[in-house]
Image 1: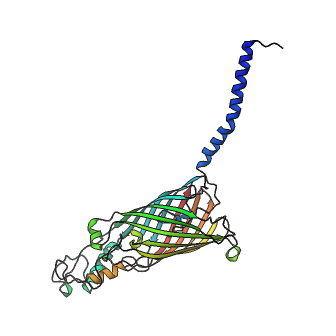
Image 2: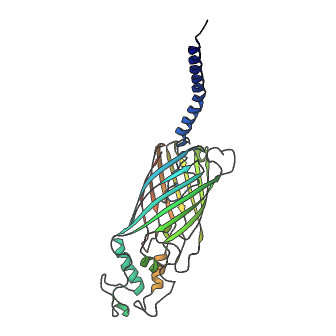
Length: 365
C-alpha cells in the first residue's frame, strides 16, 4: 500500500507525540501523587497525640516524644489547637499551631493568657499582710504609721483583672525509635526539644519579682507503646527530663533573685486506649523552685518599704507545686481530637489548691 509522503510524515509525528505522551504519563502521575501526598495523614489514629498547653504534641501538660500531626516520614502534617483551663482562682486560655515534618521535626507556636481576675486584688492584700505580719485594711494608702509602724498599704503587684501573657516557640526533633513499629524491641521513641519563651509582663513587675521575661527550656522525651499492655489494652508511657528555670512554665518569668540557674525536673505521662478512639490517662510535671521578690528573711533597712518583711513575701509567692492531671482523650477521626481533664496545679502565687477543669480541642490536617 502506497501512502503519500505528506500523510506518512503526519502519521509519524502523531505516533511520536502519542509515544511521548504515553511515556510521560507515569512520570506525571507519579509527580501528581507525590504532590498530593506531601501533605497527608498516613499514620495511625492517635499517634499524633493531642496538644499540650505549650503547643507541642503530647498530653495536656507534658510534651511527648511523638511528632505532631499524622504525616509519615514522607509527609508533612499540621495541627491547630485551643485549650481552656478553669481553676479555683485563675483561668488560662492557650491556642496555637504546629507543623510535623516527615515525622522527624516538629515546629510549634503557642500563645498563653493567664488571667488573675479579681484574685489579683486578693493577692496584693495577702502579700501586704505577709510583709507586715498582721491584718491590714484593704485599699488604704501607704503611710509610716500603720500597724506595727509599717504602714497600711504597700506596693500593688497585680490589681484587678491582671493578665499574664506569653508566647512559646517550640522545636522538637525525633532522634530514633517508633512507638508503633518497634513492638518487638525495647527501644522507645526518643525526641529532644527546646522552647523559646517571651513573657509580656511589664518590666517593673519583672524587676519586682526578680525574674527575666525571656527564657529557654530544654527537654528529652521518651515514649513507648505496648499493643498488648495493661489488661490486654494498648498502653502508652512517656517520660521527660526537663532542664528549665521557668516559673509556672514561664508565666511568672524565668529565674529569680538568686540568679538564672537551671534545674532538672522530671515529668511522666501514661495512657490506656480503652478502644481505638478513647484514651484514659494521667500526667505529672515537676516545677523549679526559684526564689522570687526577695531572699528568704530579707527586710529592707531603708527606702519606702523599710521594715517590711519582704523575705516572707518572697517565700510565699515562690511556693510552687508539681502539676498533675487525669485526662480522657477522644479521637473520633484523624482531623479532630477532644480532651477533658481534671488538673491540680497546687499553689500558684500564694493561692493554694488550684485545681479545676481542662478542655482542649486539636484539629489535624
